[in-house]
Image 1: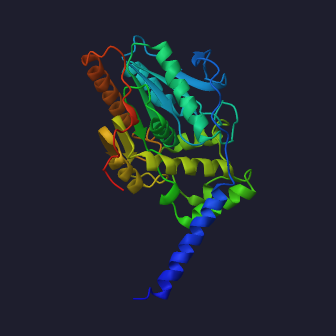
Image 2: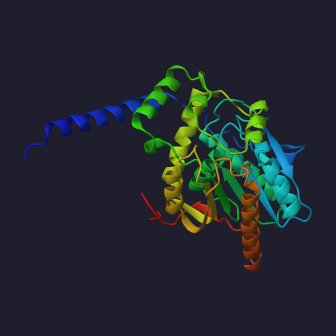
Image 3: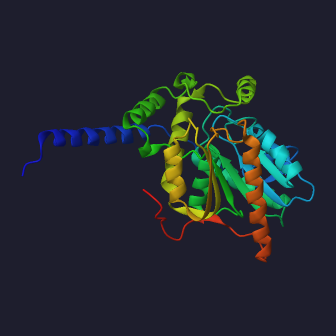
Length: 340
């Protein structure tokens, strides 16, 4: 039986679009991971990364900490994003928090430029190593918000993270094949021919939080990037797509948080990603939560939930009698079956 003509045309169109995406994507490239030159450490309010780069750092140190959290911010933000949460966790829960500025953001080198997925992963490993060095016998966790969660997923897919658990908050798992095909072609073409052109996102009409004073503070903060380079948009979209693809290939002890009012990352995509993860996964949804979960009007509820989970996981780790911290977030032994 002959194939209907319209189906043949449709298949040809799809093939042509796929080839266009591949062709334009290959034209936008980013730097490789930096060389390993020294042991990462914290020094005078900075994170000294493995290549010697000096990255911005906010630290809230608890007396006799019960746990340590390395916090990784989202796109265009920086370590200050955890100001309220970090102060609360250190004073109320005995949790030390280190929030570094990812390369290309805040007070770190390459401000406004996309450092590359491999570099962001290397910097996360540097932060974990420095936190371990300062707290060798304390349970250690990574908290990634939005793009920071995508970095954590991609790092774990590459090799296990030396941590006792991971918190993925409003994770950036939207990109690649989950985005409309024409959007991807347009974005790659624009970044290929005008990588330095910037976008503000104002026309989208999307809100990131219900906390208006915080939005005003961020708008006035010179370390928060407002106009974003097109090549940086391509970089983060690619990484978010990779993170979604890897979500059924990693696992461990996980807390997965999302707000049901999130207008930045599609809620359905986050829910699918939470089902794809392997291991011991706790999922918390906040009916009144937006994208900036740690800064929303209901943020203290989220802070409390994170602290409770971290301290419970720390108690489990101590009770296990393990001689050394375990690597609990990394490649799964088999592909998870939680969803497509």
